[in-house]
Length: 231
Image (cartoon, rainbow, N blue to C red; front, side):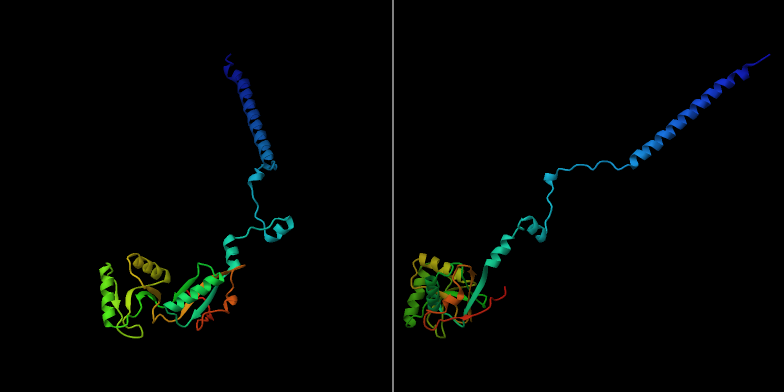
């Protein structure tokens, strides 16, 4: 009698049991991993010395640490622009004003302004007559100077204009260059039609206040207090 088919059944049952046992183990391991991942872990540690907290002014007072001060804002708070003005200044008046400012210790970085774009000039004062003007023009030309012109009318008739400039500093520098060429008797200052002249400087703590300049001005040159012009 043939019994081969019945002998395979016990072996098949063992394989099925083993597979069921493995599946159960995998299921239990998955459940255990999920539970472990759901638990809160330890808080990671950071380099605390590399973290800087931003403090509000109130917290800075509480901790005794003063907030940082912007040095630019501190400088602006310590100084303000003073402004004085004259309805008109010629070269002699400008020289007298500057001498007064020097005697009172006003800062060297003071600035004179006029409204006219080319409101400053260098010139030779009016000559007494036409012949003196002719000789002056010849001398200017002989020194290699090409930018000049005779003033033909007005209260400065017979003067010699030697250039117009946008600022006092430019006019002063040009006058120095002409003197280096041997030209003498030069003047520089606001042009006759330049209009009001303003003086600006930073009025610093401990410096010379504008109010202290109210006395001792040269005769006829006392200024008015003004506001700094825009621009």
